[in-house]
Length: 632
Image 1 (cartoon, helix red, strand yellow):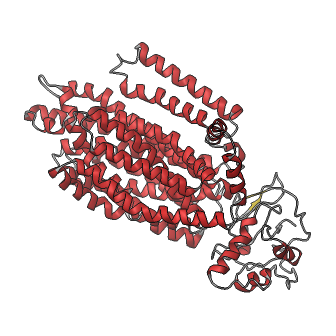
Image 2: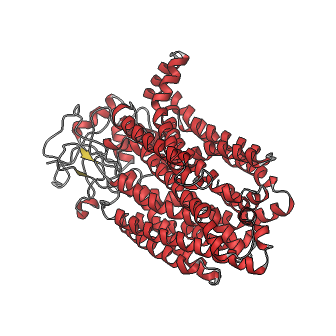
Image 3: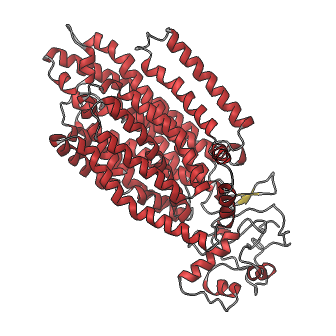
């Protein structure tokens, strides 16, 4: 995926210029971002309903088919059709990657693994740009065609592994509830299956969301082509968009059986504030580093596509490398909120430096420095917030909160590209009239980079001044949005990753809602059968009712290893997978003896220790959990 993004990103300005479509490419990018916004929560829910393997396979098939279409395109309309199908594939792979990492890692190490997941990008940033330049010198169609081959070869092992694990899990009856649901679904009629699927993925809500975004954002780009802001088409579209948003809110709050994002189910507001911060940062990113920036560099500095891409890559290099350091520090300190504040400060500084840097007379190094600082801002914000909001919700909602995160970035991408497109299509013509002397053909200048470079010197310098003023305006807007992101980061509630404290107003524990006393975090909690229950900080003075719903799971208490887990919660069925996990881990390590007591084996081979009141339940049934209360 990172190879595809880097290579196609470098190819796009030249290819759209060949099709005489540079000026309308912003419309296509906005449309694709809106599609991704609607598709990502659908993929998240689909992966929960059908399985990760099925969802990932579907997205990869869409991905490959889209590039076949784009490679065979004879006109820009066909290219658009291929990119629409591409949105279906890209949305799935984008949201499922972090979901799989969330499935396989603990919260303390998750930022490190997310950084490792994106680290191969560092190779592709420069190798893909160089390859794109060579492709342009031969046949641009191979820029799309080779992605099909690369994607098939690299995705095959992952898809095979997912199918193999999923098949084994179903055969061993680890997914009893899922298998029962699947059986009931297969027994339904075709109409029943369709209705069930539409309800589960909230098809109506997704369509209203996409329609609202289309009707609000597209007029910002196309208002001039529709006769201005006072035209009936523009006004009617904006009014229709406002009405659609009202319907969307009513549907999600009052009618939808399973809304796209069930925000009201979460006591912590960290997901809302966290996604808002990422949302604002993504607007800046898509507004400032959108395709128009490469066009700006190639026109105003007379750079090749490859060199222009290298200047822009300062952002990407920092964004890819720095998270490894941040992830390691988060693992050691188990804190995440301070890094968000650092990133929010850089989010004001970076765009502020872009104001003088994005001038045709500034040094190339100045552009790189401003890109690096904003890349650091994005790195300090995105990964800590993604981990922080996951730790703020119950484990069963991790896929949903990741979808919320991705939806936020997709909506932001739509808005960011819309702002850039509106400046390019609405403000730039006036700047041309101000700076470019004589008679000129505006459409040809903005559609073709080569035509702009071949203009007479006086007109060319006027074009450069117009482009400079447009970039200055975008940079000022970016500084204002960066300041808003800093304000939005202030209400975030910090906690040590892996800790829990019960909500003061509710008897149900809120996972990772508050931080515990740091001294109690590092102490080993002994609740083994031989324990005298002397640790008054953690050992309860009463035994909770195992059938009650008052206790929920705390994933990682000490955060040292995957085995070092203390169960603080739950009714008898909530955590059935926990004992199964321990059994499978022992089996994998060849330490499981079917003839011996399972509880004794867990005590002997893992760091998990259980109160004797619950120890016998482990042997009564594997589909049980250890119940343990931290309340006095």
